[in-house]
Image (cartoon, helix red, strand yellow):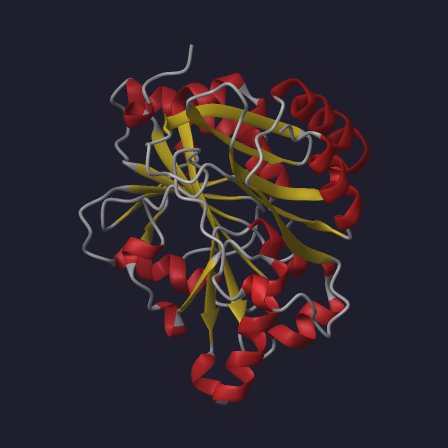
Length: 329
C-alpha cells in the first residue's frame, strides 16, 4: 500500500543537453540557504556533477557528505537499488536528507528515470516524483534541437523549462526559441536561468507529476497550429465538452499505448466522465498510465475534458479521431 504522499521523499529530475548549465544550476541549489538537506544522484559514474571543493569524500559509504548538509550519491549500479538503499539508511537514522535531485547526463533520455516511479513498487513506497526540470541553452539550443534527438526528448518530458545563456542572445533569438519550445511542449512553463539563477520555488515542490496539480497549457499554444521546424517531438491538445464513456476511453488508451507507447513521452488530462460527479485526473509516461478522482464538479463549472499529448511524431489526427469516438452525448 502506498504511503501518505505527504510522507514520501520528493524527487526532482534535473536534465539538459551537454553544456546547458544544469550542473551550474545544481550547484546553486545546493549552496542556497533553503534549510533543506538534498541527496544528489548522478546517473553516470565518472561525470563530475558537483564542484570538488563542496565535497568531503567518504569512499567506503559511497555517499558524499556536503558542507551545507546535503548528500551526494554517485550511481554505480541500478537506480532502484541506490534509491532503496538511501531510503533504508534514512529510515534507520544513518543519514538525513529531505529530498533527492537526480542529475542526468547531457545525452540522457529522462524517460527511463521517470518510469521508475511508475513501475517499481519499492520506489513508489518511499518517493514522490515532483518534477522534471530541463535546462536549455538559449544561445545554442536551436542548433542542438536540429541535430540531437536527446535534447528533444529532454524538452518533451519537462515540467519546467529553464533557459540559460539568454544574456548572450538577442530578444529575437530568445523569442524564437521560446516559441519553438512551446510547440514542442505546451504544458511546461518557461523561465530564465542565467548562471544558475532561478527562483527555487520554480524548481522544487512544483508537483508537476502530481495528478492533483493544475493542467497548465501555454495560453498562446492553440493560437498557432504550425511551426517551421521539423522536430520529432511535438505536442497537441484534445478538448471536448462532451463526456467520455469510461470503458471506451480505457480501451482506446490501452490499445493506442500498445502501438505508440514508446513515442508517447508525456500525456496528461482532466477528464469529464459520463455518470461521475468528479473530475478524472489522468496521466502517463510511455505505456504506463494512471488515473485518480479529482474534486467534484461545482454547479457553476463548465464540465469539459482537456488533455495534452507530448511525443515523437505521434499521429495527431488518429488520436483525436479515436478519442472523439469515445465520447457520449
